[in-house]
Image (cartoon, rainbow, N blue to C red; front, top):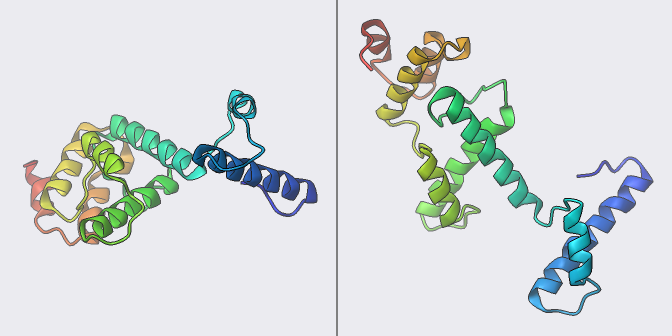
Length: 171
C-alpha cells in the first residue's frame, strides 16, 4: 500500500499494480511483458504478488502467537494489543458463516482447515468458549485476561453462569 499524496508514490503504486496484473496474465499464459526472469528478480527482493493472501498469512501467524500466549484462539473484540487481529478473527467467523450457508465467501476450505486445526472457535457463543477463556485466565498471569475480562466477555455474548464458575473455580 502506498500513500497517494506524493506523485512519486502514486507512480510506484501504479507500477506495482502493473507487475501484479502482468504476473496474473503470465500465470494464465496470456500475452504479457512479464518473464520468468523478472518474476525471479522481483521475488528475490520479497515482492508480494498477492497482497490479500500475504495479509491473511500474517494474521494467521499473529493468531498462532496469540494462542501460544493465551492458550486459546478467542481474541477479544477490544484486544488493544492487536486490534487488527481482533477484526480479522471476527471477519473469519463472518466469512465462515456465509460459506456454511452456501453463499459467496472469501474463506477457502484450506483456510477453514488451517484455522480449525489451530483450535479456532467458529461460534464464540458456545458455552465451551467461555469455559476455555476461564481456564486460560486462571493459568495466565496476564492482567488483560483477569476475571473482569471474563465477565465482560460473558456479558458481551450473553453467557450465563460465569460468575459461578469464577467464584467456585469450576472450569
